[in-house]
Amino acid sequence: MHHGSILLIEFGAIVLALGILAAVASRFSISPIPLYLLAGLAFGQGGVLPLATSQEFVGAGAEIGVILLLFTLGLEYTAQELVGTLRSSALSGLIDLVLNATPGVLVALLLGWGPVAAVVMGGVTYVTSSGITAKVMGDLGWLGNRETPLVLSLLVFEDLTMAAYLPILTTVLAGVGFAAGLLSLGVAALTVTVVLVVALRYGRFVEKLVQGDTDEVLLLKVLGLTLLVAGLAQELQVSAAVGAFLVGIALSGPLAHTARDLLTPLRDLFAAVFFVFFGLQTDPGDLLPVAGIAAGLAVAGIVTKAATGWIAGARAGLSPTARIRAGAALIPRGEFNIVIAGLALGVTAIDPRLGPLAAAYVLVLAVIGPLAARAAEPAARRLAARAAARAAARAA
Amino acid sequence: MDIERVNLPGIGMRHSFTTGRDRRLGVVSHHTGRRDLVVYDKDDPDSAVVSVALNPAEANALAELLGTTRIVERLAELNRQVEGLVTEQISVVEGSPYADRTLGDTAARTRTGASIVAVVRDRQVFASPRPDFRFLAGDVVVVVGTAEGTDAVARILNDG
Image (cartoon, rainbow over all chains, first blue to last red):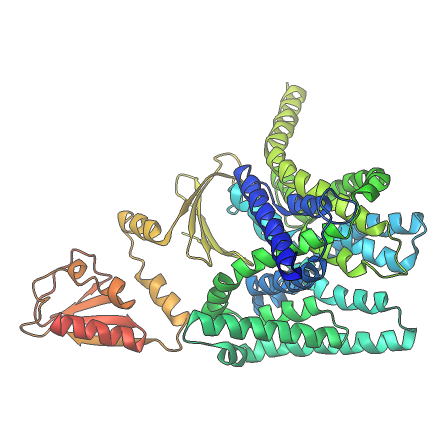
């Protein structure tokens, strides 16, 4: 068969399979991410359907997928919202960071994977999937609840932390010496600051630059600018994803809405390709040996996020029911945990078991997270009722 | 009445208040234009018991039914996008095809994207006129929209 036709057949089969999985996911209103990962495991190395030619093509698509994921995330927020959140919920955000990065760091160190892997694993266990959480809260009608602003501000804080963390991770993974590493970190910090200032003060000019009369013009300009900045950021060791995130932040207002509508279909396609690609590079056979560790980490991840919700909720003066809901809403992990683990794939200094561990961890928590959120409200009510009954009994 | 306003980063804005009879109500305004009408638990004001999603047209209809006009909000919305936006006053001239016909008949918003936000008649202002509002010759119509949109409304009112 012709090389080109094999590529088309393989890629077409993958995308078609993803479409069917997405339909299943939406039928049961669960996140499609774990299904995409499973599809990636089924295709490719050690899976049931090895791919002959399309791996490279899928790899390029996956890279664009990461960039678009972060870009559309940036579009959700304005620079003002980010700065405001940083001021108002820095302490809760730090509690979230410390509580949830610790299990990952500890596991990596206990397994003897070294400090670099510990930095990666800390990120993998830390970040909540803002996509899944926002969807779950919308589906359950939680947007009106008192804890919702708290949960959202924690998500914003996490995303901001990513903007600092990803360049650090990129530098650490590059394995350069201390001085060179410090230099590239400096460059990264400077770039992030410059872009944030531009976004805050001169966002209008960026918008003028990409403005177009037709959707076509806008789509091409925005996509081009995003990929270009992402590439430049990568060149400066800032990480392509952060570059894209910052472009998203610089765009706001009506333009951001149109850009989001235009780019969301592209993001859905390439992000799905990204999850498949991550699965492709993971041999399903490698999952079993790490399953125990992943399950333990998942339990720890549930406990630490619940504790985060409980503590941050108490600081915000919320009722126990609302605090339990806040913790449950934070449990899902998803896209960014895989993005972080994806950066570490193929780096020789990293233990090869890290990829499968991250995949298993996300598979578990992307499924359990929304279920836990659904169970949280009735459980919290039962607890509240029992506490009230006990108080009444004591009074009588 | 105190209306509490909270930012929901990435989603939009939430307004909520407590009624005189101690029920808490809220509205979540999404960036996308969707509105959620939220009713809180009688015993636990932190928790929503009902959340109804409304599209912009439904939200408008509900607001009209409740007897409030959304004009202030609409103007605020328009002010946010102030660049490229104009407000124009257009007279309904004698012999206009829409003199003695209703606002709904013009279908101005669907045809031009511009909104008729008020009508001035004999120094009296009819804010946020409804579709069944009947124009008379001599009315001055206040239109907000893009330059093309408001021009198109002027053409419609003059020539049909």
